[in-house]
Length: 446
Ligand SMILES: [Zn+2]
Image 1 (cartoon, rainbow, N blue to C red):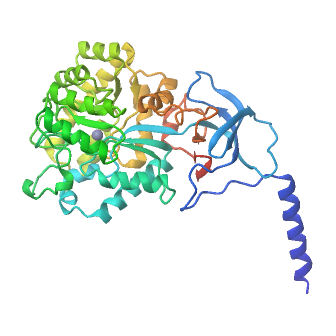
Image 2 (spheres, rainbow, N blue to C red; image 1 turned 60 degrees about the vertical axis):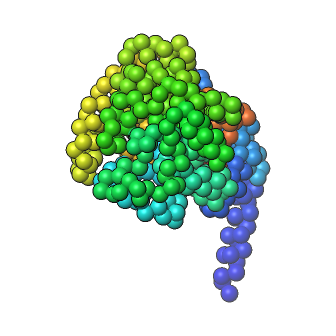
């Protein structure tokens, strides 16, 4: 009998609370309606990705997934809206990683067999696991710059866009466009190259005509941009990291297809020669960009060709890779390219080459993509420029600056938050506490 009055009192109390206090945010669960969030986010400090200033106490109003207003932090929360109180945190735009491989793992260097077994279920699970890790560590947008198998990435991109899986907004580059046995071919260590599945050979070509055909096919299969392996990879066998693999004419053939389709081309480059060839062929950006000479840096600056440089990875590979028993050849090649790449980074930044944030996620685990910020600042980059490289500047080079890369009216309500001031301590970027994408909360950790 005594239970009734207490339940009535609790119901009455709840009704009173909901009438005068906004609801607390819920973590979005799968399946979810993408970009459907309506949220008032109160930020103690706000780095918007565009301004050099840090704003204090702002309310970011997100309606139907997009930023509708940015007002004073004390603004009244409208009835029925949810308040997300981050007044003890610094908000930043959702981060962008311009260089990920969602299907691959650095530890594959110990055994590439997973690619020869070609199991769609395993591939889909890998892609979705990596995508979830990317999102929950703050990367609300990523560029998948090619993979041995392109279809699982298109699958993941579409599942996430439909709200059936957790992950960032994805642009994918289709298969690696590479010469036979080149840096983008599945390494056949301990396996017979003849057993390489056909689905892993979609981007292998030789001569401008063949590259044109493969590029057209990649576009038809849903690639959002194209990726060429201009010169050999560090994580490959039997090729030298700096040795040019594709000719300028072959790269030009790919660029022509991409630009006809209104999409961009990025080139994997590890040497001055292939960097020059790629820039002269008209690519939009270079990845790695190690071993470049001053004249090639100059050429990139003149033409506004962006670099995405994975300057943290050398440290990761040298420590963890050694523990995992990576082959000696890969460890040696890593040592040879790491410091050289960091020196090019310093020179390119000083010369004004646009540097976009790209970590080659897969070489390191997908939840460590925030670790590179500190390395970039250690090597001379201004902290605010490091933030912009992973937000507004990256968005420009993806062609997505209407939608992502800044906390600005009209763009998606994508934001992250950290404890403290990341401009004073870039290590905070390794520990993102809050992730909001399209106004929906995916991480909220105190
Ligand atoms: Zn890569």
